[in-house]
Length: 352
Ligand SMILES: Cc1ncc(COP(=O)(O)O)c(C=O)c1O
Image 1: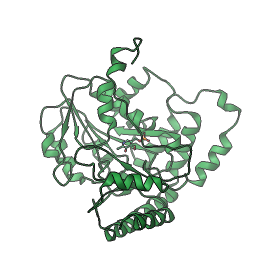
Image 2: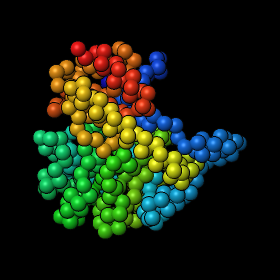
Image 3: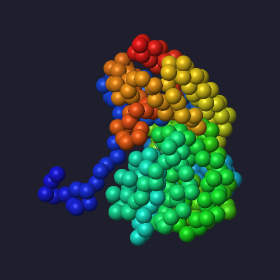
Image 4: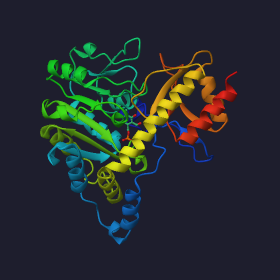
């Protein structure tokens, strides 16, 4: 703490990202990155674009990327917002819609950036408990609120709600903005994007970091009614005109057009996930069925923190959250078949 800090800085509790070790080569199963490289077309386009034109600012409206996203989802370009990773889309969303008098509702076990943004923007929050089986139950969200946000599928549980449950909730709540964080939707859940045509208070937030292998490029987007998107643009253009750099704009535009590569890598990860679940069950783990590129697993006799540390010591990183209700689970990102084979072998050695 310093005497020069503002009151705001003093009260912040910044987000702690998963480890990104720079010293040693680990098998990284801890931050839900995609184990496969971006599409070869993306890499070729990037190499071709590294030239003297980097002296110029990028397009402040990111029009080409927005157009490509709009075509992919069959929405209008005015229904698309883009920013520097979905974390920035979330930050802008919190400022645009949730800074009012009533509490923002989100699940008690969820993406921990939500509570960080509440502190940063001084937003009142109410965490709604997951059911005993760690499902989100939208019946519990029919209370007074200044907005609602939840991931679908949820992180770190990997569980998804059916579209019918979200639709039913939207029929009841048209007073505040409902944000569905769809960071993992491509790995097995249904997107709410078609519902944004019906419900003007619904926003889907997605990312190129997971299913499109572009975590390093930081590209996130939101899709919703034009007036919600206009609100996001007003916030973004009040602090930074150029949130996406030239290379990220090219990477995103080429990536979203390469549907074959996207489908192939997503299907491979889903197949590896199902194979990994079978092998972990054989090692006496209980697994929550996953609609994501990770699994949330609990061993029936060895505690999760011990396993996390033993795995780390042997060169494998997974994610462990020392939080109420989930402190006996490991969140394991799905890697390549070879990485998962090594992971299961290592567990075989560690588990008596
Ligand atoms: C639920 C959820 N939302 C959003 C994000 C942010 O992703 P990014 O900022 O890389 O787009 C993550 C990242 O792990 C996540 O798990």
